[in-house]
Length: 255
Image (cartoon, rainbow, N blue to C red):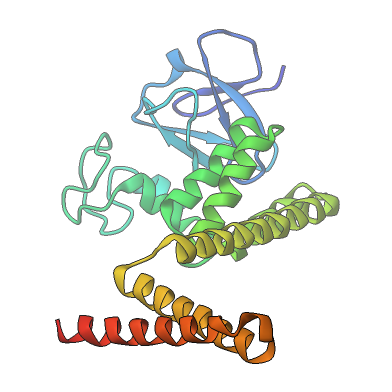
């Protein structure tokens, strides 16, 4: 049983039912931590695999989906101050009482290598590691990236993960999956636009369609009578239909 003790807690892979499951945000190694060993509002650990310092807010908002974040040595020394404005305050504060920044979100953004990423995408990426073998969280993350126009971020994260795990095939698989989902998404958008365009009738559009339809019918009746002796009477009907159509249009415009 691998075990390492930090200042605040113990990381272990035991099957104790009172433990919380967490992942190192850098190498995604899965661990279990005894909740009765945590005595700080920010639980801090050193990953036995990659030696990264990371932590999470305790107690977590959702014990079944704990979001962890990397901690630099500077942040460790200033753990009682805001990581943005360095205002000293209670380490139990979720938001800085001076600048108002959400501390967890700020740390997530600071530790993200990709520029200008919405916090919800960073958190959604972390959700993947709670059930890494399942396809559902991957699909949710990718769909959210597509909807926000951040496909490049999804490709970047899987490429980064592939390097960390030394598995080139992992990136090949997920990059192709991302591209296929992007194509499907674009197709769905185009179909929805076509449906919207087809069914989005307004009174002016309906009048135009009816007007040109009557003109087409009237013109067809005249041509039919001109070229077929058996339908000579249709010429008069076609002319009458055209006169009525134009007359009705002029009347409606003056009305």
